[in-house]
Amino acid sequence: MMSKTAAEPLVRISKREGTTFVQKVLVRAIAILLALVVDAFFIFFVTGLNPISVYGVMWNGTFMNTTRFSWALRDLSSLLCIAIALAPAFKMRFWNIGGEGQVLIGGLATAACMICLGGKIPNALLILTMIVASMLAGAIWALIPAFFKAQYNTNETLFTLMMNYVAIQLVAYFVIRWEVPKGSGKIGIINQTTRAGWLPVLGEHDYLLNILIVLALTVFMSIYLKYSKHGYEISVVGESVNTARYIGINVKKVILRTMALSGAVCGIAGLLLVGGTDHTITTTTADNRGFTAIMVSWLAKFSPAYMILTSFLLVFLQKGADEISTVFMLDQSFSDIITGIILFFIIGSEFFINYELKFRRNRKEAA
Image (cartoon, rainbow, N blue to C red; front, side):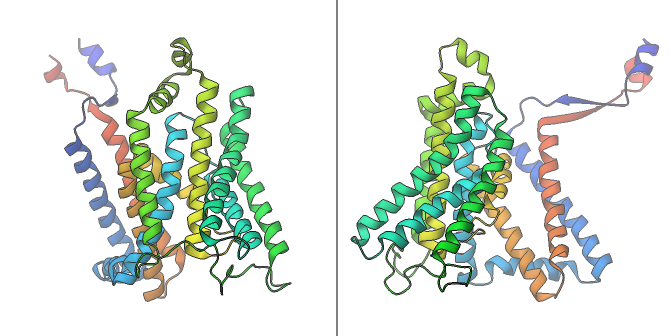
């Protein structure tokens, strides 16, 4: 008995069973508090600044006034839209890393409609055309890697990642074709005088329509994934492709259908950015949101409702980091380190939610 005890490792990792919602919230809260403590030491010993004042400035980056808060909601809606678009694919274990490209292609289709059809057809018809074009463009861009995955079992991670760079080059080409003025290397504000193709403004809130559209998409995606037959098939394929085939699910059809939906919603994100926020198109329109959305989706465990919280957290950290750099005249890298420490602790907390550490019992206890 004693030799068996001595052979046991000091620490064992085992799967945690039956973690309650309260326990998950508590673990994440402790992780954030620990991150703030570590950040406080880092801030004080590197810069000599008061960590409390730095955190206050970070808070002001989002909540100083209604204007800044509206900007945060605008960025939250864009990030959330891409995150919920990636959720069905991720839940199916199809690692769609091409959200960036699908957003750009949807935005490019939107810009093409605004430039080529603006002033030639009624504005309501133009906006409807933009919606259809952006969704089709995003869906087609996502269907290309989906087809090769379903037909030839290619690596979807690399395929979708490479499609991002193709999309960037396509946007760069058309920016030169449509540049105003010639030689400027940029399009500028599209239809600035006529506002043809600009999404409507609700009341005095410029981005309220974007927020409402993304909120409606979030509700739709929650219902679709949790209660629909398609959502059930996505879950089964994600758990086991062999089980899905055994019970009669057409796996190829599920892959194509799910990726078409994912790409279409990314296309809508491109529509909202070009037609509702920026009113122009550049190679940086997506602004790396396609990659940030991967973290949002993963942290929320592919639940659209929880993605609202994770999106807000990341937007808050980004706005706070920018404000720290501006107020204290610090390099952007300093604020990125502060943000990175917080994200590191949050991501690390997932380990303690899913697993537990078991220490070796001493000989007296073993006896």
